[in-house]
Structures are given as C-alpha cells and as structure tokens.
Image (tube, rainbow over all chains, first blue to last red):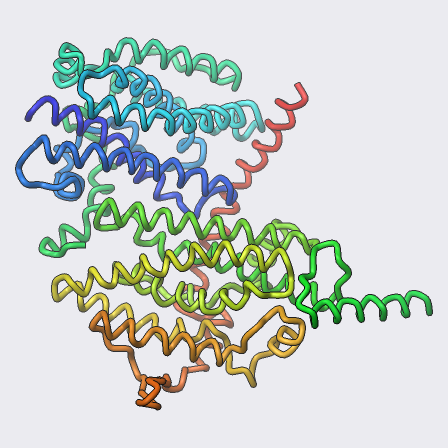
Length: 249
Length: 313
C-alpha cells in the first residue's frame, strides 16, 4: 500500500474509531451537560476523520469514496491504535482513554502543522483548535477523577493500569511513519512522545495519579493487528452497507 | 386573614388581566399554584420527552450507513439533549430542581411523549422520526411559542428553529430511501406505517377527553386544541408523503375542492395502553435512563468533591 495513503488512514482511523466509541455512550452520560460535551468531542473527531478519508480516497485514485474507505474495509485493513477500540467499561475508562488520546492528538497535530503536505498541515491547523479543547476537558476530568472521591480514584487507577500498555504503540513508528517523517510530511513521534509524557506527568501529578511502571508493548494496530473489539465495532458500523451493498444512503 | 385573602384576590385579578392582555408571566410574578403545577407538569414532561427521545435514535447511531448521516444524526441527538437542558432550566424557574424532576420520571410519576415507547427498527425510522415525530412536535410547539409563561415561550422559540431543521433532515432521509433500491423503499414505507399513528397520538386525546386541556387553554399555556393541531399536521403531511411516493395508511380526502384530508379513527385503547406503561419499549426506555443515572452517580459525586477541593485550595 502507498505509504502516504497508509499514513492518512492511520490518522483518520484513530479519530473514527474513537468517535464511534464515544457515540456508544450518547444518552448514557452521568449528567446532561457531560453527555453534550462527549458528543461534541465525537462530532469533532468524526469531522476530522471524514475530511482525511475523502482526501485519502482521491489519493488512492481507484474511484472509491471516503465512505467506501470507512464502510468497505475489513478489520486487518484498519490502522488505528488498539487504545481507541478499547470498550467503555465505565466513565473512568472512557476519560482515561480520552485523555491519553487527546494529549497524543494535541502534540501530534502540533507537529503536523509543519508538514510539507499542505492538506495534512491544513487539517492539523483546523483540528488542533478542537483537540486543544478536548485535552483541556479530559485533563480537568483526570483531576476530578483522581483527586475527588476514593471510589473515583480507585476506578481511575484501574483504568490507567489496564489501558497504559496500549499507549506504547502510539509512539512506535510504522514504515509509513518513517518515510513520511523523512520526507518532511509526517511528524517525528519521538518529539510527540516527549511532549506527551510531560503533559501526562503534569496532570497525573495534580490528580494524584501514578504512571504505571514497566514497558509492555501491546498492540500493532498500525500493522492491522487489533484486539477482539474492533471486529465487533466494524460489524455494527458496517452492517447496512454490507447487508445492502447496492443501496446508496 | 381577611387582608391576605383580599390580597390574593387582587393578585389573581392582576394575573388574569395579564393573561387576557397577552402579557407574559415571569418567574418572580405571582401565579396561582395550579398554574405553576400545570406548567411544571407540562415543561418537565416536555424535557423528559427530549431526553428519552434520544434513545430510539441512539439505537441507530452506530449503524448509520454513511459518515454524513452519522454526523447529522449525532448532532440531532445532541440538539435534543440541549433542548432537554433548556426545558429543565425553564422548569427550574418554577421552583423545582432537575434532580426532583428526574426522580419523578424514574418513579413513573412524570410522563414523557408516549411515541418514544415505540421501537426504531430500520434506518428509515431515522427519517420517519424526524419527518413525522419532530413534525408533529413542531406543529404543537409553534403554537407554544405564544404560551403565557415567559421562560417556556422563549425556550420554544429556540427549540422550534432546531426542530424544523430536524424535520427537513428526516424528510431528506426518506427522500434518499425512496430514490434507492427496492429494499430501501420497503424500509421507508414500513417506517411510515409504524410511525404514522403514534405521531397522530402525540397531539393527545380528543379535546372532549383531555383532562388538562380546558384550564390550559384558559391560562393560555396551551394555545390551540389537540384536535385542531392534529388536523393541521395530517393535512400538511399527506402531500409530503405523496411527493415521496409513500402511501399514508387509512386517510381519505374529505373535501376534494380544498384538499382537506381526514384520518381514520385512532386506536385510543392502544394509546392508553402505551401511556399507562405497557407499550413495546416503556420499560426499556426508563431502565436505560435509570441505569445511566445510577452509573453516573459516582461521577457526579467526585466532580462535586474535587471541585470543592480545588476551588478552596
């Protein structure tokens, strides 16, 4: 596969699948204002994904649309990080997953604004405004979760312990990452990781949460290897186009 | 005592005069307790309807067949949460808290629009709900923009703008389905067949059988009668259905010259069965809401605890 197309898909798939998970909790928020905020984040992410898929379809030049890339790819052709497909076990899981990804998006997109690929730079500039707000929201939540009640702190620690292993993958370079970086079109994930780590340390410190020890590299979403969850997400998401392949929606 | 009674009479006279002169009643104004209670009942029921109404649409959110349709549906559900928020706030100006309203909903004391106790079974339901259910709601809500209680009337102005957008989006889904494959057309007709009567029932019982109507009309909480609004909706929707190529169940043209239609008798037994808790989804909808509320309890607690700590530090 073309490395540039692959790079586009890595970015869009993260946003799409995370947004899908957030869509699952619409109408299930702890209170109404929070339900609305969650949907805002989901809408921003799906918007970002959509614009990248449309451009990716043009890059691919096989007459497919952005929607085809979403609805007519199988599990192993998806390149999102395993972290975003992890289920909504409780509000702590949702917000820890979100915080780790928001921080990733902020620093990743900050670097991407310097891309020589004009389309990617433009997407990064637009989305950076949105994810900066997302990170502010999820950072505030980390503090409320970590430094609020004992129950919340306990739940949050469990979520961190179980999700932490998936963060390493975010900073592991795929071939597409490497080539795009060398061409000045992609970002240096080491720079992103450094900034990310600093932010996570800062917020965890205020929230009285600890960074788990050890390096457990789990997940190779960028190679199309996923946890069991993605298949089920796609089965649901792609149901109508799969079942009625000739329909135009 | 006598002074107080006289004073109440005067207050009531002043209130009646305002109502008669179409001057809005505002939160700090004196109002009869019955007026206040009637409003709390109606506004909270309306708020709950917006919130429970998120569920049948949420049922298809993650199966939306294109990114565009997914974004639109997601934004629509979010608008409904927003409407719920304005309406809870409007009701709070009458001296009831959101917590109390939610408790009444969970206890089965407060109602919500019965239409949401029907299931959403295919993608065209997302069209039919927008077109017919939101369409019926708008027909009612347009008249409520002139309701006598200020905060409710103002909330309605804002809500109506968004609802009419939703109705057009719903109609567009139906339109796309009718331009599509035979399966899509089948789904569209099926959705219309299932949602038509529940939408008609949204206007409530016939005027003669409506328990709260006469007081509501007198106080201008309600501005037009159930049957009048229902007829308006029927006559607006039939030509829209024809344009789509869909057949509305059981209606007849009663006046060819003026193009006035009449629907056949509504099954009121079914209406009361659903209102009284035995519709296909009543239990499911309330359980969903209770579960979200209970699951969120520890989150609400920690938010309060942490905010106190971090503001006082």
